[in-house]
Length: 326
Image (cartoon, rainbow, N blue to C red; front, side):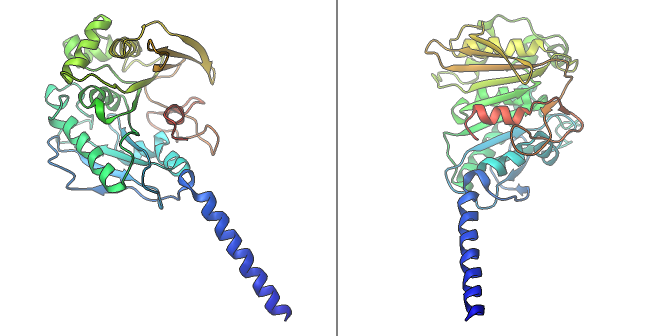
């Protein structure tokens, strides 16, 4: 009898534990999975590779983040280093991680500066749009909650996707990146990177509007993070991004809110209705790379390494909170 009661007690406790585990596992606590390559996702005119990360047990209707690596990087390294994969597990969303091929660019940079790769329906931009469509279909994800972000060349391509496919993205995050049409405005990608282009806010905005003629909105909102000591992509590009996207949103290029986050200057720009449409983090003293804050839980995410810089602020976490992912 005693043995039977003890067995029943163990069974009850196991059942309760299983129920508690299921309850806690919800969308925000999906379990770890592995990176998978997807082929046949479309015509793929830009000849990119598609990888994705889908937490085990992820329910339908969850968001999608398109995360674009920088030069010399790959999908897996950027996904882990930036912290996007651990946040996908923590908060419950899927991540699409494109990868450049050396045949397209010997430094593995996405071609943010090539006209044939930055226009709607062409090249790499079209390939990235096809990846998003494939992931939305496969994961039965929420098409109103798709976000795009990237570092450096990936940041430049983030601006491309905002301009060429604005209807696909609710918001974007550009890390150490460049405004849309910068290489053409400056006459060279290197002038754009090392100096910046001379354009008025209206000229910047016109470049975006020309990428999707007749489109009346809504446009993606934008968060920019950039190091003040970045000598690869000068901080002037963050100023140009602010001018470009406040003009697109019909907002004043002067910040409505200025404060500090984790000790770094933070600004918010609002449209005439009061909605925050552009946000910036100037990471004082940081060079060229993705801000990370390694650790577990809380505001920590990312792994320090090449172009993943431990500055006590994780860009992916800040973006994800702004987007309502967690």
